[in-house]
Length: 353
Image (cartoon, rainbow, N blue to C red; front, side, top):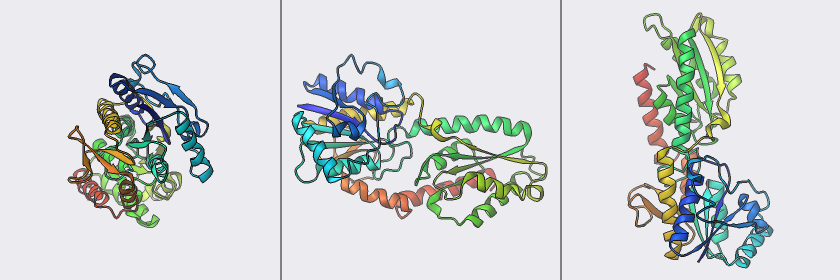
């Protein structure tokens, strides 16, 4: 079989580890392996590159993706998908493994529909952890570690000057990064879009947090607030609104805002991300050999969901089911989202909120 691998959408640490595992597993099991350069944009023009054990040697420790990635405006169209199918047939691809997030999986599902040119297998890779029915996506653990390290450094300087910091992290419509990193960093409050909290309530909440944090009896020298980018109020505006009340709520304390931005995407993948990526990569090659298609391989999905693989932590789930649950995950109606919210609110009590 000739197997192709493609990375799409936002890059995430661990994508290279998955590419390496897929390539080495395919070669060891007697298959040819090619990489699609530049995501779905590369597929539109048939830009395939033969991969070898030498070309992927050691790439697992690097962030980003050696294949490149892009968001394609043309691929979602009928013309674009027809071109992609034609190139897959012409290259005699037997299975395409797509590594990416929600949009990338939606593209994979579209390719698998109707007259599919080959088997289509998806691997979840998104630092936001915004894909349904998988406990973790490739890249999440590294992103959380990066945020926690940044917050620890910010907390050092905050304590030195008795300051409050409002730190925005990535996440688009999913607040998982803010939630998990906030707990690990001992944040005094965590803001995320899934709660749909009105702006006035957010301001009132932060004012209350600051009053509690810097009350004289507590002797607190720093206040850390994590905000997901999915919260609709801009970080600068929120900081300014809260800052207008600082003289009364926390006399003598300064509030500073920091946006971590794309620094969260980069860096060498953590050991956990490498492990997840490599195991998913091997499972993808085995799934191709088994003839499976239009599925995503999920890491520790909910019990009883999907089809068993030879790896006890990985199950194959229909991509349509993944996309449906992703909608619920992001609009807050999923039980997974509700559990996350309850946990964060309970953990906030540990820091006195």
